Length: 93
Image 1 (cartoon, helix red, strand yellow):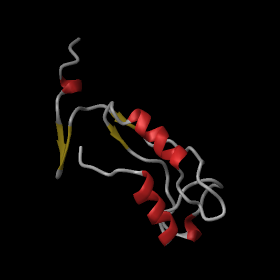
Image 2 (cartoon, one colour):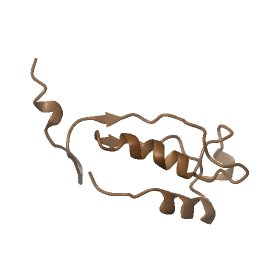
Image 3 (cartoon, helix red, strand yellow):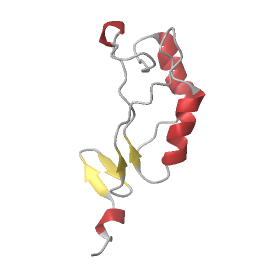
C-alpha cells in the first residue's frame, strides 16, 4: 500500500494543507481559572505536534454561558483573545 497520497497536498475550500495528516481536537483542560485563559503550556503542546500537519484545536467556549468543563479555554473575552494571540501563531496550511 502506497502512502504517497498521505503526504500530498489537500485543498479544502480556500485552505490548502501541506499533507493529509490532521490532528483531531482533544480537550486538554489546561486553561487558567478564573477566566479560562489559554496558557503557554497549551501553546507548547500544540507547537510540539504542529510539524506533522494540520491541527484542530480543542473545544473552546464562545461565551461564558457555553462553558462545558472547568479548564476549557475561552475566546469570548478580551483577555482570552489576547492570550490566544500572544501564545499561538496562526497561519495557513
